Length: 333
Image 1 (tube, rainbow, N blue to C red):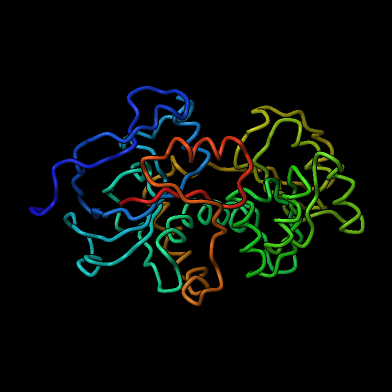
Image 2: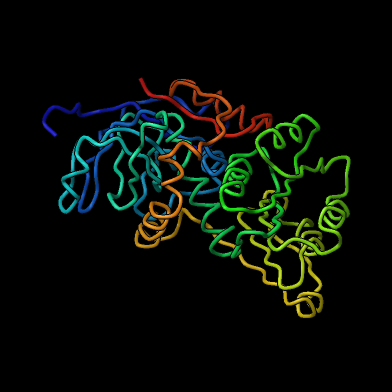
């Protein structure tokens, strides 16, 4: 720790606001605690929860840094007590509760994944948040298994593009929605089996047509609101509806008897507030089930654009404009 600077540049706005509040400023370099490591950050993924936090609508959980950023990649340069000594000097990527938009960040050692040669630092930084989210919700909560047809909204988002990639690896037929013909084409090019322009087509009717009237096994939904009853119409008997965001509204009216009659399951989750023990378990599961595909070069995130840390405001403007396909990433130094 003696060779480290005392301060670092970070995106740690003092008050909520528009993208213009995302100005790098000097703050103390964090010190790793028990079971933690200090990472010199090479790149950090940009995610929609970062936008909500910047607006003051998604405060960090207790104990998490105020600095934005939920995922990162970089080199482990210092160890807290109890951290595995072999991690020192390793290039890792990790899910964090905050702190990614910075030159240095503290990471729970149990949430580190080794970055293989097949991945660049930018690609590695763009993996954890969407990978953990899709894995825990589509596969664990939604029980998606080989041969299933799944519907995922926001097909060109970070979540959507990760769902497409995992569907290809694990034998799912994936149907996505997107907001323009250009995005439909982009989702199809990434490997979606079917892509629906929700502005010009009725996705309920299209899903019924695609599945021959049978419906999907799982819907992964980030819209909420009036999408929920429409999503239920897309489900097969015994289908699972998994909510991961409420961009279109936090309440929905649903036909309860239809849920009973067709034995539907409605579930959902948030990831950031889950405890370190849960995230360590997911990290271990991903290391065993998904990481061999990453190491072999079979799983890479779709990268939309990179911005230097000083242009974090532009990165957020791009995300809010909604024109991106895949992940937006900040780079350090």
